[in-house]
Image 1 (tube, one colour):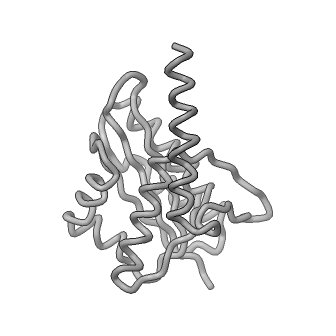
Image 2 (cartoon, rainbow, N blue to C red):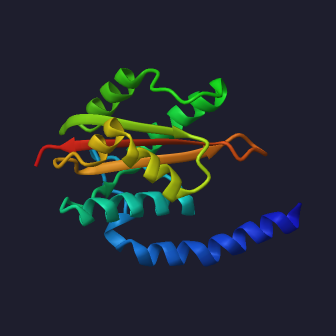
Image 3 (cartoon, one colour):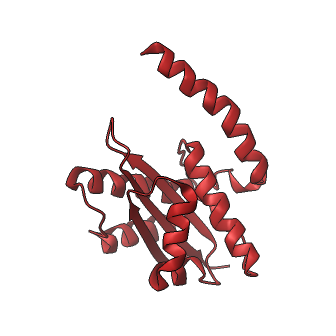
Amino acid sequence: MSHIKHIGVLLIGFILPFLLVLCSPSDVISVPIAQKEYTYDYSPIELETMCLINDYRVSIGLNKLEINNYLSIKCEEHNTHMLLNDTPCHDDFVGRSEDIMTTIPSTISVHENVAYHYHSVRGVLNAWLASPTHKAIIELPNLTHFGISIRAHEGSDKLFYTNIFIEIKK
């Protein structure tokens, strides 16, 4: 078992620096919100997904979104709910939105995409872009920040994705 752990650490050591090259440093720095700093430990697949979303937005003439750790924490909480119920859903989206708008008072709007069981980052992004509703969220021109969580049942390859986007008053 320790060999698996070491291999994972080695892979992260090689993959994470590569992914950070794809994103500018400002893309992965937490932004303080409401005078409190929130931290989130991003996996390489989460960073890659956010980079691909930003690359897509830039390719159609939109702004890059800033990564927000608090949003990723809310995504992770929702992924925990989906994992416990073994189904993708938007349960309690109103509650998550209200919590985000309370914690980040300058928030104008909150949007959410979820997905389940895609094995690659490109696969989930392609699925979101093939869905008019999900694509419309990704392409909202006034979005400013986003967060993500990608989780699986222990010992399973069934990935659950939650991606939250917000618009903050300028």
